[in-house]
Amino acid sequence: MALVPGSADGELPGRPPVVDPATWQAARAELLVREKAHTREGDAIAAARRRLPMVEFDGKAEVTGPDGPVPFLDLFQGRNELVVYKHMWHDGAPHQGQCEGCTTVAWHLRDAVYLNARGVSVAFVTTGAWDEVASFVAFMGYTQPWYSVRDVEGPIGGDMGYLACFLRDGDRTFLTYETTGRGNEAANGSFGLLDMTPYGRGEAWEDNPGGRPVIGNVKEGYPAAGSQACWYWRTDSDGDATWGPTSRPTPQWTRPGVTPEETLGRKDACH
Image 1 (cartoon, rainbow, N blue to C red):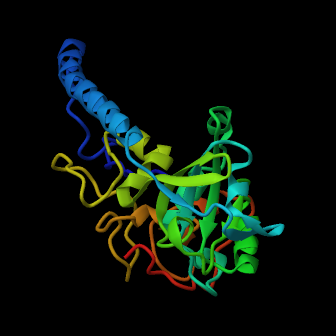
Image 2 (cartoon, helix red, strand yellow; image 1 turned 180 degrees about the horizontal axis):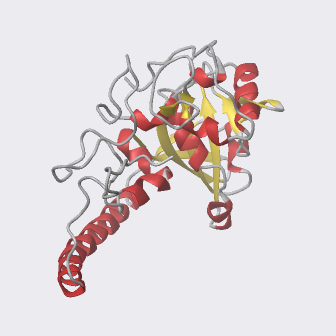
Image 3 (cartoon, rainbow, N blue to C red; image 1 turned 30 degrees about the vertical axis):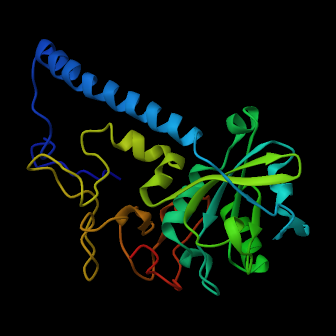
């Protein structure tokens, strides 16, 4: 399905102006200067991040996984570094009623082979009861380790919706970094690619040239697609952004054989 509709004569609305190759190359070179400055600043921020102090906590605190309670140390899988995503959870909600944004992050972190090769493990934690979490993980087909941190305090538990980095030194464990909100975009490669395209992400906050269309279709009775953040997190089976009895978090539609659901559970996770 084309998210950006064409006009009757086939020309895309609000498309970039057409210029000769020399003019395009000059504009591209001008933007490249800014891109390189952005990259260098990102490198400098990463260097400062590596110099942050850290907080020690009890790595023997237990979390619950498929084999029952285990110490948090087990999440390192013998490696010295660990990245954890803290997945929000709505108790009692059906699978399609769980957090849309967290579902999107988890879908982009299904394979950690390159991180593992660098000595970094990846795991997910959430405050849901393990029986509910296990069912959701099986439904989504996730392959990364998942654990319940229900009633666990400190850096292991706490607020969900965060990316957190941990370091292990023998049996000692440390929290080195955490971020949330748009900081979580580091786990979602789709955002970076969409930012390279002429029509962008389709978010309401984007600075777009005049005439660019609203991406996605507007369903009667629901907010206009693109009129709020996270519009693309939940769609119907046709891929149209919508809230309602036939919608679910976008990644769930990529699973073979999925069908619309009649019950949604909570639908306010991104508000």
